[in-house]
Picture (spheres, rainbow, N blue to C red):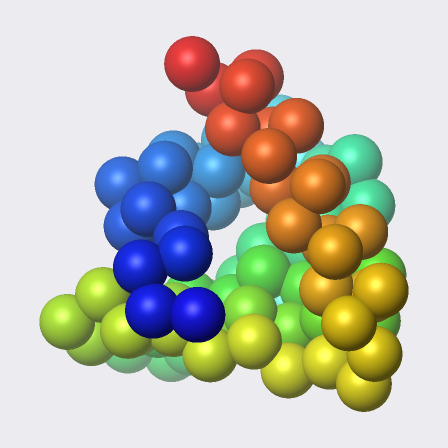
Length: 86
């Protein structure tokens, strides 16, 4: 899974969600994806469709999900948001 996600695009999607999203719990919600960060801002999170993406220091990331189908739907959603950014 290494290098599957482009760090720049991921940060742009996070920013898009924060700009256009509605306040939700600890972050912002936009088109089914919630974006939030830890207290110091070094780690950001994108959550939706049963998947949690943690992106942090040195452009490392980790995806938590129970079924690969959930991951596929989540990744498709991120791809559609990337198109909105570009």
